[in-house]
Length: 452
Image (cartoon, rainbow, N blue to C red; front, side):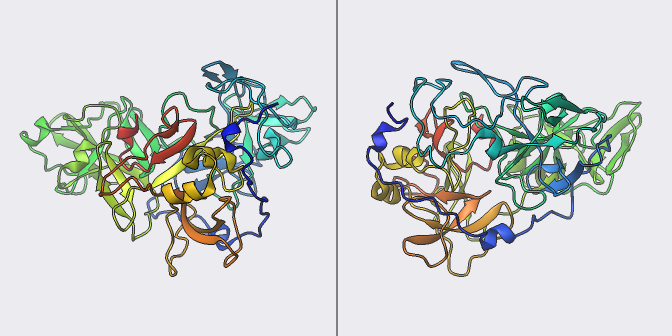
């Protein structure tokens, strides 16, 4: 059989480093003071709620391991993932492509089979005791090996080998990755304690508050506590989010009368609005107006202080200290398991094929890592400093030959692109297969509505 990435040729991909837990792994999650409230629902005794930095309250095991599910997905050339009340994730190691994602046909041998894990080693089924009973939306299925596995809302539950400390969501896909992407796993978030008519969406900026029409919700610096200072002229641009006559205040949500008979919602005592000039779902254009801000139930941890924010033709992007756009690498293999191939322990052949035609030196030249300065330290589970082997991208011991301290987002190293010369340049965005939705580099876009 030919290898899946024949253009990698005889590339020496090096030896996988089974390094000790590094300092970044020892860091605990940084949870903001303003945390998202969740609705109390019936749960089994061995499941509880943990707070994560990016996805808010999540269901977790007694050890704090976040729970995930794998929704059944129709792909370009077939279907994969878990049907309801079934698990397609087994201990059998896949060795060849499935042909679910063109341009690869089925039957091509996957790289580094001697190190490849099975689906159930990467996504550990959350098994239940033989005498376990369903509780609320938590149910049970019987796996092919006879063991019981927990489900939530008819989806089989798993933990990820990437998660190290309570509240980790290192395996989660945050935001919209676009069409033709792989069959990604999703975090099982606890139900948000929000009134009817609202939604919460996980973005790179935090848990963004939306209406049930997917319109962004805003707050104003001019308003007082449960008091709106948005007059008639103001409301032509900023529509108050009104509450029905039957609506009731709850938790951090209050209702005040802005005028006789007109009730307006407030969150954390801040009156809520939508922006009449927003031209699409989850638009954040209203936050461009001085004094107005998107509302969040929980903000994401801030990026490193030396990073900058730049405007580009695609939207607002994160950049390094010199204004160069920052990119992350995105990859899932074309096996039936749809396993991620963008982690620090993944075969480097995938990334090297995209960034340098299989040539390490070309990759290092065209896609330099975002180096962390000598004084840089891990800030959170979201923003870490990792020591990597520059040839393989695997973790390395600090100070070892060929190692480099780099900034990482959720455990994945970050890059710049040498074609970008001026702040806001975006020549590396979408470099890869199907605009990098399957395998390639994407700009770190802060304004998530631009990634649709």
